[in-house]
Length: 540
Ligand code: URP
Ligand code: ZN
Ligand code: ZN
Image (cartoon, rainbow, N blue to C red):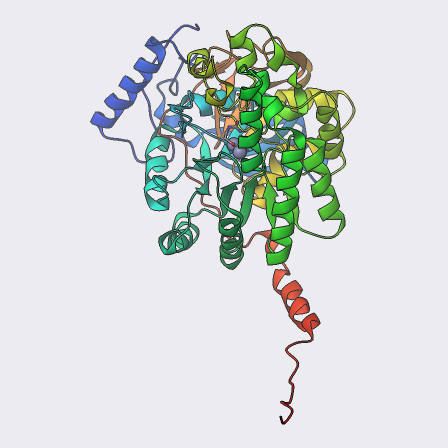
């Protein structure tokens, strides 16, 4: 593990905390360093200089990439905000100068899909809001949107619990909210979440029978409620009843290992649920966001709907774009089990089709579904694949993997890379151009990527708490060398400088661009009904 150097903390742009809280922070960090789970980011703090709270940075001579254009320009940052983007900016003293000549200066990644410190399948994901976010920053992601899981169906309790978990945040984050049951209280709480708490998206699990799964009836009610609130409905699209049947079939056949996971929930079940959710969203006339699109079957349903003019967003994740399911047949249980996630990683061919769909705009943005468990947790299912906690890592690896697989290979332009890793997420969740862009007035969440440097992924050097990595040994070109979060250099020269509590909760307003004109389509629909017909009752 890297040498530890805990220094004095300050929280830029916030009043100094009380000594008691500082001590607590130091304690928390000391613990995380001394227990040695998180690796490589023990150099925590701000160089003991609280003056860094108003860090001024000039990034010189790089190619600044936004989703709409790229240009060689300087970027000047002050107080966490991009002040100027143009060639040859002149500055005075006390400004940190970073030479980005020959490198790309891009908006920090936004990961739309993570699960930090989530209670799930009899355990809790291994990365919390400190280790998960530190890992994200080391990999060039500066914001993520995590899924709040209600407590016994209660949204407010769930929200409070996640706000509490996020107290140790080191970068900006927002929340989606899962809906796991339906009653008047849930419906009212959805209003509260949108109007008071800055949540503009709700996720419906069509799988995980017996825990998170909802019925079609609930999905319909949820879609209608989302529409009325200007909130995006998201679905985990797998047919949960059929998955349960498929699992039973495998167990009856004596298939209890990780390969049984993939065999029990084939692509057709993902395609079926995706089609069903799309049709119900069409019936309600509300936008739909399909999370973790893992198969050709699901992707083609999205393509078809979009071609017909329906507002459907498809989110592939790094694992589905990069990996194939052969790992699940690995003779070593620990190796095979780390690839168990839902929907499953598919056979070779699905990955390439998803890449093509991403590069041609059929799918719009890339997440990770970072939901990491260590090998001890994965061992919970060593005699029954149904008990293996579902989830893989990716929050640290996404930006590098997508660069290498899509841009370095020539499948995607640099501007499209920015779109799928950052800008589209900011647009869909209505926080653009504060996030997802390097424009005057945007938050200074910026990465500098050297296209000539290379990366290598290994559990021994990653920043997640997990002892395994599904991308173990992966190498590629393009390396994030600097990460700037909220105007502070938090990752440079391979070292992280992060402070628990410095991350901010980002409120996301409702009625983003996906809702533009929805009411006009509704009006056209009502006009087309040509009903009710006024009939005269004939005399008997
Ligand atoms: O296997 C997965 N995907 N775990 C996280 C929960 C979910 O379905 O997103
Ligand atoms: Zn899911
Ligand atoms: Zn997920």
